[in-house]
Length: 188
Ligand SMILES: Cc1cn([C@H]2C[C@H](O)[C@@H](COP(=O)(O)OP(=O)(O)O[C@H]3O[C@@H](C)C(=O)[C@@H](O)[C@H]3O)O2)c(=O)[nH]c1=O
Image (cartoon, rainbow, N blue to C red; front, top):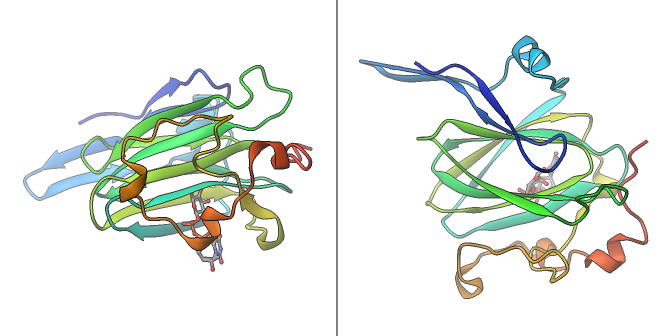
């Protein structure tokens, strides 16, 4: 059995979380969120919506955010494995444009807490990988956007070859960082 464990990441407000997990003769049991335990760890998070995506191996999704009323997100994997990445897009932040990655999988029972003001993306490392999102705040179709996964000013070192990656049409048309800076995420 392992209890929730919260590790602060070097980008302020972001956490890597070991979920509560217990295995037994039937299989296993994982808890993905408990408001009071998160609150005691200093994460005030209130879930407004949940959704999931399923991806073949080598799908890159992101890097996504909303410019108005940005959502905080708690992301976990309920099948398969991802290499997850977040980018600090708070223009006033000392770690602006810095990124950090973490492997999340059904085996390691890990989650990533992505505060407001970050872009989020991942690459799936196995077929039929299911990513679960729990989000604070509402989806805003009008300002749901992102920056390019390979923007050189961010410089993410993706763990797969670009020739193998599968993207949505939308993700290939996302902004550069210099375009982003004309209309950055509103943190108010
Ligand atoms: C995120 C979202 C999408 N949609 C719609 C828009 C579109 O028609 C369809 C699929 O959306 P997308 O192509 O944007 O899905 P996807 O590329 O998986 O988007 C996700 O990517 C990762 C990296 C994130 O961080 C998430 O917050 C989300 O942006 O679902 C909603 O209706 N509500 C939502 O909350």
